[in-house]
Image 1: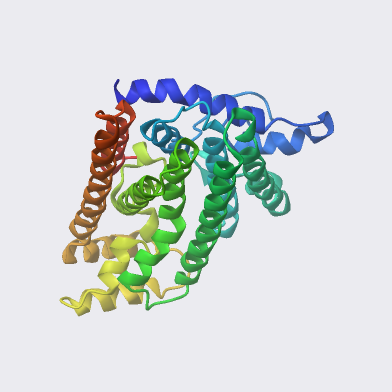
Image 2: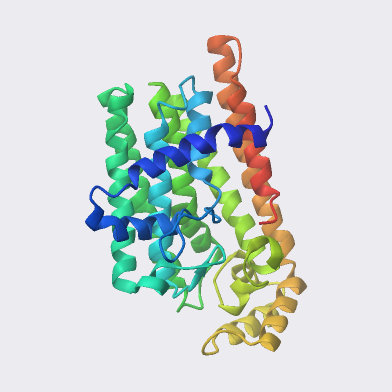
Length: 354
């Protein structure tokens, strides 16, 4: 089965379960749940049905494939998959407020349309719905022990995500962010939830703690590779594919990997000093300053450095899958097709252009 066929098989299940979770319990709350549905890509600004860009649904896909690869059933794991997607979207709604971002995926953000207070409330609601979604695992025949383990794993990932956001926000006003601090930030902010995605999928399917840990490590390394690739696209991505202006991360002086690498460049200290001076300016960089910053990044080879880092994390993710596969083959004499599909998914994410 191709990766596209895998998405065609799983996405309708995910969308149906998400819509069931984000259904207004009473008509008086229609506008509140409508704002959530707007963010999830199902409604327009007038809260009328629309088919907009709803994102990759990456985390629930990883969850369901991990559950199948661990010997479980995708439909049984659906509540966990929905919980992960709801947590991810809670963080996006709040990120947009914290970053004063007026657009996401080519559409106005929730806070930009309905105001910051309602935006905060929408994010909070998505977070609580995620917690409630996990309780539905019991309705699908998942044992209480596994359900509790899944809930604990998700709670830990949520806290890690918030810690990562703390780091990311604190980096904005700092000129001394090092590569180790950057790596710690993306471990918390991005990798933790993808690690939990694979972990929850496996937790629903098996009691084998060593195997669950291998799935966790796979998701963690995939998340690190994904974020580094995202940082590359934030500087050199094609606007028509990414949906945002080229070099956005430079214009906004974001401490993403290419900039952090350049700012810590010991072999070319003049490049580091000049970029630091540009980043010390008030407000976003203008077109001239942005082009100069890009030239500095190119001069020190920051793109190549970031690509090599993404490739290393990707290779570690593949090694994790190989360990999972070897364990399954020793146990069962075969490997589920979902394991190969996880490998294909990882390759598509690291090589993506949007």
